[in-house]
Length: 100
Image 1 (cartoon, rainbow, N blue to C red):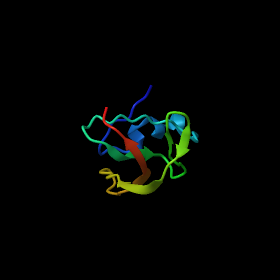
Image 2: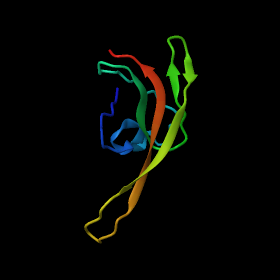
Image 3: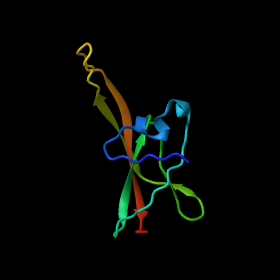
């Protein structure tokens, strides 16, 4: 199993952003709430904006409200002074996640 743990990373640090997964149309994300209080959303880094969120309710997957935002990252190229950018996407998905 591959993992993605990052606070300020890009999707390219995650399995979903790797070249081998570039044609994937779906993937499964597992989330654990290690805090002492419930959380109501998760943030997921994505390689494209063409994803929707579904949440497991104990019996089946059901669609949940989510929004995807494009993130542009500047990449400083010290060799020729240019600043090309690359993009990834971040999804905010509503979820009721109890501690534990």
